[in-house]
Image 1 (cartoon, rainbow, N blue to C red):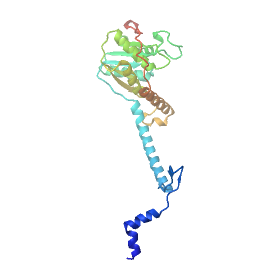
Image 2: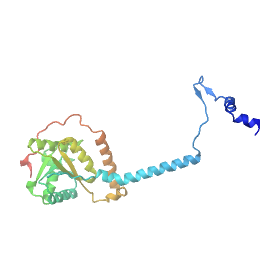
Image 3: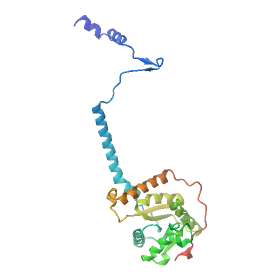
Image 4: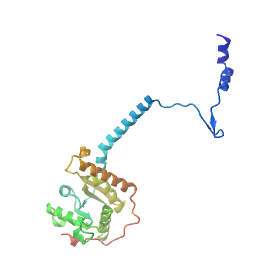
Length: 264
């Protein structure tokens, strides 16, 4: 090996070669300098784009499969009190009646505010609570088995207002209730349960029973315009309710909208 090779391999020679390299250009009085760096080539960027696209497709598939059962949850609790949201379609009313008759429920309540198109609250019989009670009777429920509990809330937070009316009814009638099962339409279920729990408090356990929509296949909801509309609408509403909905103050205690003698 020559002396030249030996000299270049010694620490002194290596340090000298580094000192011999030109200083990187600097600007702004030496505050910024330019250095060589590594970056992705076109091939690297292509591979990264493919990985990201695959991840997005996977997430999208999981959302398509999981969002419907997440919203349309069914969770029964140990109770003999059933509550039916009166605005639901008649197929849900029939399903609620079947659920009531085949299980251990002793009381059934219907809730809901003024029917749309009436211009606001007129009387208790122009509310969804009354409509739901009438449909239950029409489908075979005994008159004395159902109690309507109307709400006067119409323009916004209607589900929460219905739950507050039910809470007030329990209080005004000295009815001690430890839990309820609320029957509603499928995609509304998780939001219904959340709002009823907010209104009724932690001492009362809220269960929910989601009734499937017979107009489209829930497993392929994205193939139906109605399914897409309902899922997007309810998912947005649930996110708002879960993270942004806070009653500005405790709901005012109002006189019960209906008494035992108000049932028809």
